[in-house]
Length: 168
Image (cartoon, rainbow, N blue to C red; front, side, top):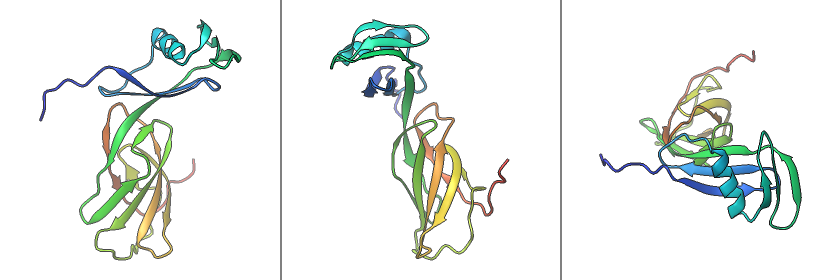
């Protein structure tokens, strides 16, 4: 293991000045953008006349006046699909935020058909399994997971179970 310190630097991935959504990554883990961070990010995006408060107002680079904008922070984390023995597991997006839906694909390493009827009682280490669909050839499962509880980069594993969670 390396003792290198993880960076606390905010790496801005994208900014949508129309919706007020800022997507960012911090290597060291969970970090909430401060008012100063948001101001600096908007300024970097070419915004002017920036005022902050519960909501934000600013003029975009293209000259649009935006008022009462609620800034949405999407901190993204890197996830790595970790298969259980005898399985292969891939994920459609490895840079994810809490609340995002991602799709995992799980198959038997042997290429054998998946016979059991797995459902949403299955669990995922980085979120909640909301849907499982068996492929037409019964060789793989498409597993939809709503990401939650992430506070740092993580390995994502899935534990299959039969049956579905009851709708409460």
